[in-house]
Image 1: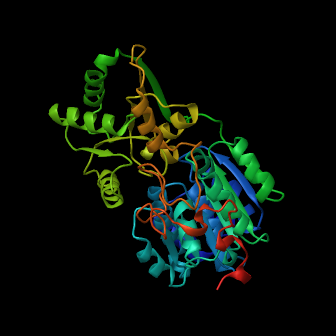
Image 2: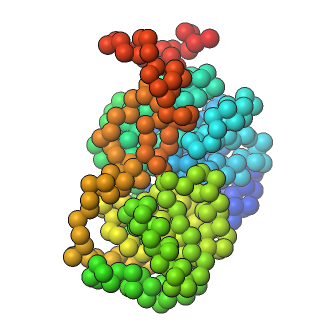
Image 3: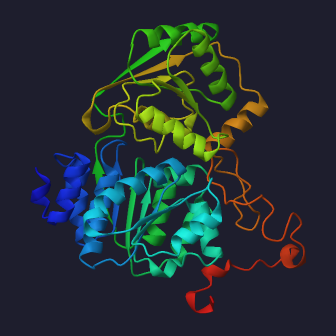
Length: 417
């Protein structure tokens, strides 16, 4: 099938050509017509199958035809926010559509000023969006379409309260699109409470795409570094992504690779400042870095098309995380390879290491009160500010009252100034 058969406008077809897309993927063929018809969707699809273009093309066609006035796209991470925003800007450019992004790691005032300008699509992380709503920089009542991208990951890393609160604040008469690699109990709860009459689209099985070759290697714990060096040298010139469990592990591996004269090595973890993370990803995309050592912060939202090798130096914590790590290669039908090291004699994680791991990947059980300031570990989308909230460390006054009022932005548009 060709994109022309989806009955897209000439301007959208031009932007698709500019992006280099030749034929629609299966998820695009199934989802785009239904979005254009205004159907609420729950889409389960493997990572790397073109989900962003699927909802992006559908939304832009609806906005261009005046069927939708303003759309909100919720994403779990800063990197994904930037990449989705860039792709939607390209798709919407021939139509003259404006796309803005809002995410943690950047000064809040800069984003508030940017949002004073007109826009048609806002791509945001949940924590930063709540901040902007509380400061009257964004009104949820203005959006009549919402996309939850990587919805399962947003819930996994502790954004459940924010996501449900945002959905509560949106107009009930809206288009709702949920895209996820897995469908679990959290996704079903969102569907039952916030997506009336959804249609389910499932593409592929819950496994890495067929173009990916997987290999599991038994290696003693003390021999993992030599085995890593051997694996990288067997794939010279291949853009590679090495996953380690913790920030310290990433820093140690980068040092070991540099000492072994492995060229063009970089690292990515949650404690890095956002500008450094953005520059590192851009260098990786431009082949200035050939080997990127990273925590799970790179397992989702990192859209680099030509990653040929994934090395799980430390095994993933669960099957879903492994699937998303694997999905960084073999994207859009390209071939790729995943090598996982299995060390049966590995020492158990210490308590502080486990806590650090949670801070990198998100701890679903932690308290996510909107009234306690950032309270997020490194690598997660914080709320901005110093961590003390608008009234300082103690907050004082009614802060300690037993009765908690709903956030102002959730009390209805009529009560907002």
